[in-house]
Length: 70
Image (cartoon, rainbow, N blue to C red):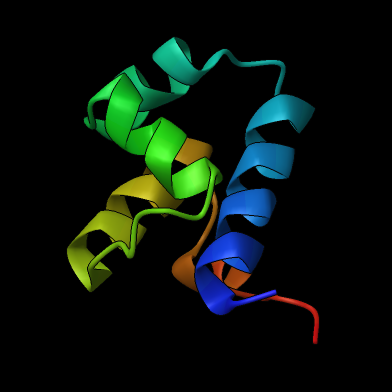
């Protein structure tokens, strides 16, 4: 599994743990829902700016967001 798919799975798991829909999370992260969907499916390669938005939307640090298991 490549890093985009790992990140996408992590974002999805963190979002679902909070009980949020993609719409709600996208609003919190100031991103479009279809972009969030692409990240979660691993078809988007988010920039560092987008990673920051994702982390803020999830109310975590960027370090926590990118703590991917090998």
